[in-house]
Length: 419
Image (cartoon, rainbow, N blue to C red; front, side):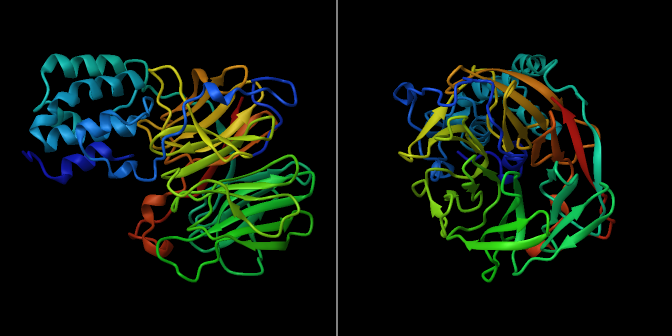
């Protein structure tokens, strides 16, 4: 029996760079026994699972998104209320803070002691932790900056205006100017190949833009000139990283897919099978160079074998929330550094890894619910710190990158978090 309309369900579901090593094995070829890992269950159609029993059987135990969907079903179908209490308590143990409106609605469904227990579980897990400082400011005339990159050799920052389809750069972290590209397309992600003096730029689209260029662009960082442009048969490329051999990996978060431009290759190939991932975001390389960590936004982490092209699930302790990750990086001391902007509150986490890097063993909150954040997104590990964009203001832009509302945009803030 349907009990409430989609408004409540919306309340519940809202919010739904290369390094040498990752704090795991220090040998150049860490041995991995992937036979011990659970195969990754393809998530391309997981969003079509709508029943409580079906959702409860999805093999993503560290996904807050799945638990929120279970709560939504409990409101819509009376027979599925049995899933509400365990889902809510799981969110509490994760440290996922539902909105006041959602909690008020839940009070009509669950006993008072259940709500009290949920709120008690949140204590100490949602308080702000502010540890970063301002590294650069991008003025509002370059709207919708999603990523930041920094070239140590020239002390130069790179970013973009997705709304205006511009690649931009700055030498003083305050004055920015456009880097002219040879063709069209919206810059979406950035990664530096310092050895080859290249900035790799993923190009994508906003909404339905049939004529948009989708692919990779290489920019010579010394001459500030485009030197390569390679199309990809993808919906829109976003996050990107560069391997030691110069190959480039990128994710298509809109169409689902992992793409690679192999070193010396002239074409971009898709590595995963269709529907393997629903919305792959961050991509970080294992030290061996043979595997990549992939963050699937609503479901968690996968370990992707670049040779066999098989994906495996990376689990962690049951109280850790592993979904909602945008930017993802590998750090030699801290393991996986993850920018979680699909969680409530937003956070930047360090997930420690087992010796071979096949399992998450623990977590440390590096930053959480910063008072000056909008939505932290993507950045770069450089000089012992994480540089990241903290307020791209996506909510102000509609189809085609058109600014909505009359209020002026704020400057986009690049923050530096020491690690």
